[in-house]
Image (cartoon, helix red, strand yellow):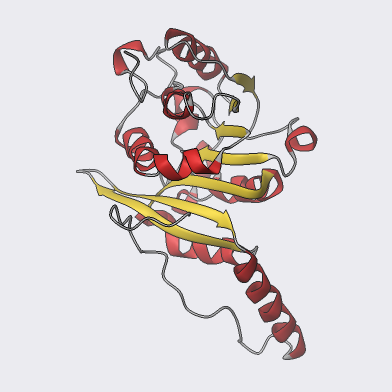
Amino acid sequence: MRSNIARIQLVSSHPEVYDPCDDSFALVDALLADRASLIDHRPSICMEIGCGSGYVITSLALLLEKECSGSYYVATDINPHATTVTRETLAAHGCFAEVVHTDIASGLEKRLARSVDVMLVNPPYVPTPDAEVGCRGIASSWAGGEDGRRVIDRILPVADDLLSDKGWLYMVTLTANNPVELCVQMRKKGYASRIVLQRSTEEESLNIIKFWRDVDTLLEANECTEVEKTENGAGLGLPHFSPFSCWNYGNRTAN
């Protein structure tokens, strides 16, 4: 009987590739908690940016394989060893994804524009000196620059370009990355958000944020933009909100 998620013993590895760890497990746990909604969502294209070992994209494919057998999977990574390992992990579980060696989604923008229904991102979020960002090998999987935001801030505009009208984005962040500010930033682009899972380890406090396009949020953002123009930037902005409504297992909504 096939497992609902990737089996650690079947996950391939390489000295220069990040192995599944607490952040990977937290992201997959968030997907497990949201499985019923994901199935109802019926995604046509699912994508992971920064696939590493392939544990997360393989887990998503296994979660959806029975009910969403027509879904197409794409995984990218800047580390060439990671793309090899991801292909091996997928194959070991009898799954397939188009695995691309690229920086974020370079070369895929036109083809995937406004087409991705589910996007997964476990970015390099660890605060480090900016000089470490984008370095080769395994360090590329964690080095996030000042506040751990250098790569995250590059990924979000790409996600906005690639996500479909019904697109969902699941992203791993640290408390140090200022997840509330990220939610406000995406709110200005018309995305609602929720921190669906929080987990603390000995080393870090993790937040899994789910973003989705929301018509009311977009209208509100546009109205606030017009007010700011009219008032010549007189300090009026989006109303205060909190994304910290953690997952309610007994009362799930569509998002």
